[in-house]
Length: 160
Image (cartoon, rainbow, N blue to C red; front, top):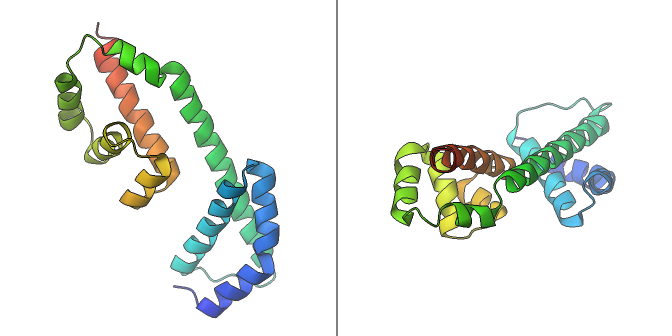
């Protein structure tokens, strides 16, 4: 765990530049703040010792990589929506009893995929709410939903 004074000093010294980098890449001020916060949160929890001469570049590269990963996973989520839009889920399952779908989710998905799917589609939680509730990243939520939808689509849609 990092020294709080060191993190505070790094925050004051580099926050604005990190935020500008994130905003430039994401074009969303709220997501940019989240990414910068995530970088500092991970730094607080890590035992990484930073080279004073390379601290700024380390922080900026960390922000850049998190932004690029977020963009990549958003694109993946959009592809999933294109392949299996929420409306088509409803249309594709109208002849299937909801109990069959829930049974499949409860018995054929991994525990984490099951939890994410139930929170998303049964409780209508947003990705950020799911991530916070389960202590995982939003990117992990995207991955779990993508995996689960692929399995559901294969089992129910392609089967018919």
